[in-house]
Image (cartoon, rainbow, N blue to C red; front, side, top):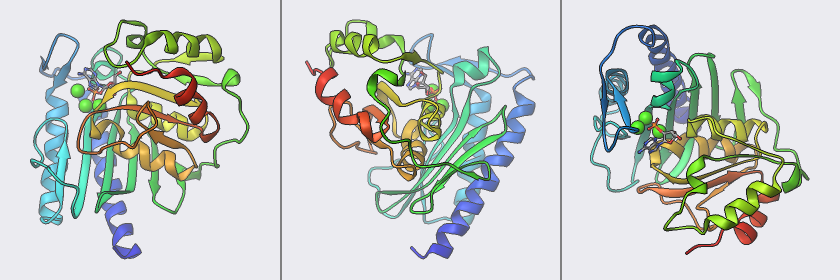
Length: 267
Ligand code: 2AM
Ligand code: CA
Ligand code: CA
Ligand code: CA
């Protein structure tokens, strides 16, 4: 794809994200319907659904040949990454949207022939847009993010994760994770995977480790983290498959190998 076409896609995606975010800042304090999905912790609101519809409609009108992969089901039944695929999480951190009225994001990644080309993560209430175009660096609003600082050791690192890692787990031996938590300087848990990716890209967190995320949670974040020299893989170090759920480790390249080889013990 020509770089002028990519720039046009980026400008459209950015304009729609900012417009959807503006609506969302108004919706957050109004009454809205809240439903649960798989269990009482898995929330979806009318705002999630309306926002995804907004994106699907705009994309279909302007780019009818593109595919849309969205969390709430208003996109297409995507079974391949051929062509251009918009991967959208209308609200990442719905629980934060409902309970905290902040700390949630719109996450939008655009993949071309399977390759992440555009990433946008919008921290809606703070009005901060993290963005990247492949090969052109990553930005926090209009400020370029520097490449990740070289040389920070694991013991000086801040690790994003959630408490599920401390529970018995059928995939990964949690005792390795306990050793990792003991080793690092501190842990954080923000409740929005997209924002945690953005924080790794910004260098204010050094790694983010998560058990099971869907493509829309990570599509944008991977592009942004790549642009500052970060690495993203499954927790065993293998490649992410953007068509299915994955375990995820995104981090400063200095500590990737050490986390995977010394602390992740697959069952
Ligand atoms: P969501 O808000 O879009 O559902 C919370 O720790 C993070 O995990 C959020 O990014 C959240 O995205 C994601 N997540 C993925 N699957 C989830 C689930 N079944 N229940 C709650 N959060 C989930
Ligand atoms: Ca959800
Ligand atoms: Ca999500
Ligand atoms: Ca969501």
